[in-house]
Every structure is written in C-alpha cells, then in structure tokens.
Image (cartoon, rainbow, N blue to C red; front, side, top):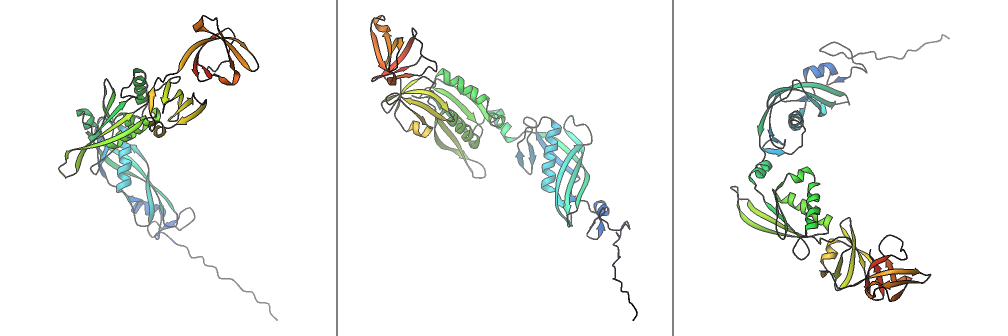
Length: 374
C-alpha cells in the first residue's frame, strides 16, 4: 500500500496599492482600497479651509466667529490668533470619506506675527480612519487677522451697565473697616469678573458696583454674600426694548452684610452673643447666656432680629489666686479693695492664653458667669 502525502492550499494573494504599487503590510495599512500614504496625498484627513478671516478685540483679545464673540485671555496677538484659528478649523473642518474622526493637533505660524495682517499658519490635523488607522497631515492656511472691539469692551468704554450691586452694612450703613475688606476682596476676584465692573462708587451708605451684564452681577453678588454672610435682594426694572423686540431691563441687587468683627457683641432675638469669627460663609458665635458656640449661615442670621451693642455689664478684674474649684479676683472699680470669687465653671477664658495671677483682665459679666476677653 503506497503512502500518500496531502498538501494544504495556502492563499498567497497580495493586495497592491493601485496608485503607488506597494503591497499592503502591517507598516503600510490600506484605507478604502489604497495605501495610507496615497490616501493622505490624494484625500487628506479633513476638508480644511485655505483662507480664514479672524477679528480680534484690540482690548481684551476676544475673537469673533459667525457673529459670536468668544472671550479669551491671550498673552500675545500670536496666541490670540492661534486660539481663534483652532476654534475656526474645529468648527469648519469635516473628515474626508473614510475617516471617522478628525481634530486639530496644533497650529504654528510660518512667519513672525507682530501686528494685524495676513499670515500663513501650519495646521496639523490628526484623525482615525476606518479600521483604526491613525492619520496626520499638515495644511497651510492663510489667516487674515483684523482688529475690532467686542460688545463687552464697548460697554466698559462708554460706562454702559445693565446691573447695579448695592452693598450696605447692618443698619443700612457700611463701616470703614468693612469697606476696606470689601475692596481687598474685589481686587482678588478673577480677572474675567473684574473686567465686567464698569465703575465702583463709594457712597455714604456703602459701595455701588456697576456691572455690564446680569449674569456677571449675580455671580459677583453671590461671592460677596458668601464671603461676608450677606443677604441678597434682587429687583428688576424694564427700561425699554431693542429693535428686535427683546426687553431691556436693569437689574439691581442689594447685598446687606453684617460688617461684624471678631470680638464684637451683638444681640440676636434679645440675647447677647459674641462674634468669634467667620468660617466658610458662616458666622461663628458664642451665646453668652448659655455659653454655647453655634454657627449661623446667611439665611439663619438674617432671619433673626439683630442689633449691635447689646447691654452687657463690663468690668476689669485682677486675678489674685487660682484654686482647684474657684478663682479669686480684685475688682478694679473698687480700687482693688473688694475681692470677688467665681467657681471655675463660671469663668470662661477667651484670651487663648493661660490666666496669670497679678494680671488685670477686661471681662463681660452675664448672669453669674464672666467671660475674660483681654
């Protein structure tokens, strides 16, 4: 019996690019029947405009696309044009047939940009073709950059504003200390918000801020309210209509802030409290009647009856001795001739320092308890 040998058929058919003639390989993938290199040469990655017109605000660097102004904070004219160009190409470029997704990888000026005019930019476009093939191609785009002025800067230049923030203190008047704190706070606001402040007016009652638009005014008012435990009240008045019929109105935001400092005495619903600080938009208070600390946010604070300088008996005492259960003081009002004794549980030390014998202290007297302040 003869031994037979069988052979397995092997498909050795190669696919060649009809343009360049090179065969398909792992290093040369094909897209829609042609090699990647020829695909890039003949079709590219995306349909990219050859010319682009860009308007840049000469004051803030914002750029205009399709009648819309886009805010930005460029460090140079080159950066302003480059950012705008990326946006334009992203909006207008469309992947060619056979490419699933495409995006701007980077842009680069091919010549120095010193002033407004026409410049050639190299735009690198990357994409993913069908089958997951990565693509990248550079395009040269002629950019014509012209100067303009955005609506926000026009408003600031002419002093136009759509909103007013009126900042007042407890009792309707803002004291000098809080004015200084408020000005420092406004100086630390993000530049995008500061630039929308048309004017700042100091009045007898407080400070008025003129803001270009309603949205920015609400953001600034909310930040002030949170930082200073304030209360906001909004009023809106119609001042006219635009040519397209849209209503034009002026927004007024009244922000009332407590203007309280640490160590200040206030009355809440008739009871004395000591202000010990402001933490994360809340007042930290010590209820002197019950010797209990509590936190009040703006809503809780302004829902109560608040008065300044409640009646609390004050005095000066000199510590004579500290015992296990009592403290003995000499009363300064009697020329230190009268000794007074307090149980340790009724002596509250708010100085953050150990009490020293022979030292005189200022105290608040509430019922049978004394609070040592300084």
